[in-house]
Image (cartoon, rainbow, N blue to C red; front, top):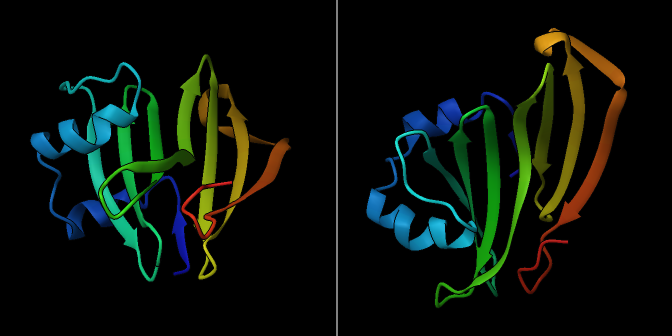
Length: 144
């Protein structure tokens, strides 16, 4: 920590971490996503676990589907039960617009998210769409 999750950060995680097996994806990730199925159009890359948490386990992974890429933060009890799950950074394409958000997680588990929209097929960034949001991982594992 701190760590920045941006549009291309998943490349580093993909070369440094072993891929997730289909069995792990089916057991731990798909149950967290309503209606999700394992298919050839979806890719998952494990990113990292947040260290030094006392009451929970926090994991981040990258998910790619057609025209949408997300960094997901999920927290679990020691028994593997889900506490909370949030998409904290993403890139998605709708019509002729590209929506992007970047997240920074600091040592205190505070998450700063910068987001905005690029029009004309993602060529021109519109600064009037830029905004910053804040989240944090609470001591009980909830993401608020």
